[in-house]
Length: 467
Image (tube, rainbow, N blue to C red; front, side, top):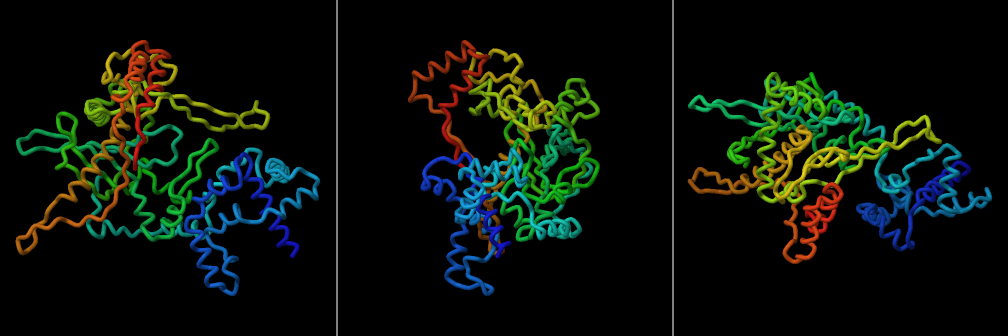
């Protein structure tokens, strides 16, 4: 009973401590966390309906959703009594301070993350499942003759220097036509997580419960156990499993839909490069000689950017995009608590000039006069990723409209149950707001704030994207 009481008291204190910063009435707070109970309420109802489970009341059964119950449904009376006994304020902040003093939490404990219900640790069973997956050498795609060996192609990964999980790579394949002329096929390789975590596997289940890795200033909370992320990544100088998309471009930058190839593959990353590496190689000419593939990728990316701008993409509408900030906590000897804050301010890689916030922005007179990025590497990677997304969508469209002739000579549409997530956005609403359009155009003409005032003002014309 003493141990049980101590556990209940600690749980209650933890729940109280996670409420630091939460505002609103109890009803509003309950609404804010309603998403955490999807699935849990059904399980709870089923357990209560059966009344007993393994000899216990259904409401006491421990399951994967119980942590949410602990955080949001457990009675906080025990914690309140502890605080009263210690003659301390019975507030969330006071409880937080107590837990820090006891060493249960750190001074900068992320209570928002704890409150979210996102699993911050992997269970022993999940870790064991990851180890078993690594040791499993069976490859169903190879057995079925689906996996294509692309190790003959030089493959590059391009990412930030701090990236630890490399999940995409690029290659160029030269194809010879019947008349002896050549053409280029561009390959985008995505790490084949499905090989290591096939559907319905325990590793897949662990990732599905998390849905995504979370990137925070303090570090990353991964969706896969750390033991398996290394072998999933496209690491240089070793064979890696990937899902590869091959595509060719028409002269105007459009996708040649008849050229699209999607296949499980086996690749070998030749170089793990940073954006700065690629920029230097292109500037010094290496990207057009020994590593000519980088130059070919940049030429294709430039063509694609011009094509998308001609179709009304945001890069043409807002030539000088708003800088974005990356905030990280780093060790700091001079900081009072040993933790300093690092802020990196830069323009998004997905639009416009792709330059640092301190760089001089070139003038632009027309809406579609998009300036070449200061960082060609960022343009290269951005356009190749957008290209892959568009190609996947066109491939699905081809599947849905393709016909296959059966033995009786009848044409039947191929059945396609594959669901692809996508996001779309309507064009900016300019016609109904002429006065605001005039203000925006003046901001662009005068380049107030180096062009960033125009970029910020332009946001009001964009409509919400839909998934």
